[in-house]
Image 1 (cartoon, rainbow, N blue to C red):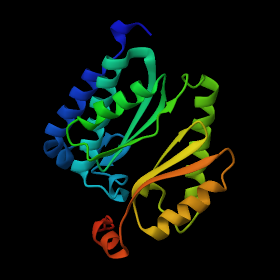
Image 2: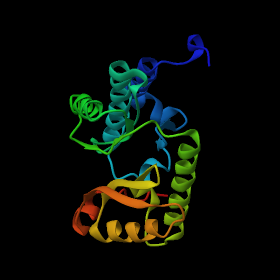
Image 3: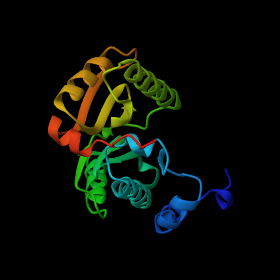
Length: 214
């Protein structure tokens, strides 16, 4: 794609920040706002255990981290950034241990980052075939969670890298154990890594979104 027509990461970040500034005005009078897969003012955000402000912070963390890593390393690394409740999961590939550590250092200095889970592999970049396979595995995992009637799929973020499934989210120990059991049974999953924030059942009752009044 011609770079003249490709939106820059800075432009994407600017759009996100504009969306934040206009949020209060738009929610009451306009259609629901879709940010990062969570529909603010609609049904999807109601199932997210983060506050809407934290969801926006996570979007900003992902954009800023990606831009700074790209500027620092260029094509030397293939890095995916996933932020949930300001905990950042770093996946992908770096060519050296030094580059792997540099990525972690960059992310740790981004505003609002609480902690960094560095799961970068030190190796050549994954092939397109491998990345496509990972996408399929992620879809299978989410479908399996939907089929499990005792799990809320939107309580988890699922990231697959080279057959390893990473789970993020604010969940109880029961949910964490059940999700791990379900994911391990999905075809194509080689390993499950949990980067979960464990809450008590009482905490869950407090933070879980309440059904909208009819």
